[in-house]
Length: 156
Image (tube, rainbow, N blue to C red; front, side, top):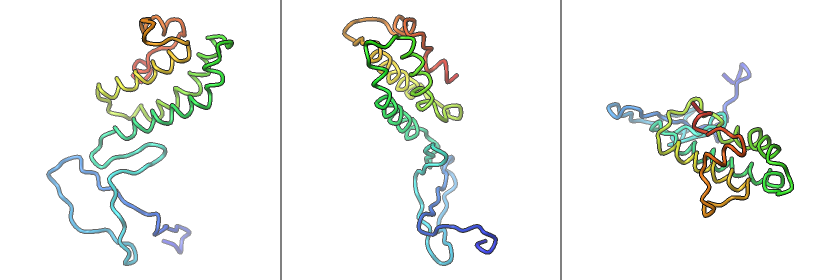
C-alpha cells in the first residue's frame, strides 16, 4: 500500500472491536508487518467518541465538556449584564449549542442522557440571564424570556 502513496503510522494505529452482541468472542491479535496493533475500548473519530459496547456516554460527556469550554470563551458576552438578552440568545444559539449538539443526530439517546443535556443547557441559560435556582423561576419562563427552545426538542 505504501507504494501507492498510502502510508500507515505504525505508532499511532490502533483498532476497536465492536461487541454489540455478546455471543461472538474474538481471540487473537492484529499485526502489521510483525508489529502488534493495540486494541482499545474507545477512540475518537471525526470529533465523536466511539465505544466498544456501542454506548454514547463518553461522547455525551465529551460534548458537555466542550460546550462548557465554548461557554467560557463566550462568557464575556453571555455573562455581561449590559448586553441585551437578544444578543446573548444569538451568541448562545450560534456558539455554544452547536458544539453541545455535534453528532447528536446519530445518537441513540437514553432518557438519562437527554436529562443531563437539558440540565447543562438550563444551567447555562440561567447563568446567562443572571438567575439562580433559588430564585424559583421555572425553566419554561426562562426559556420564554430568552426565546431558546429546549435542547431535547432541537435534537428531535
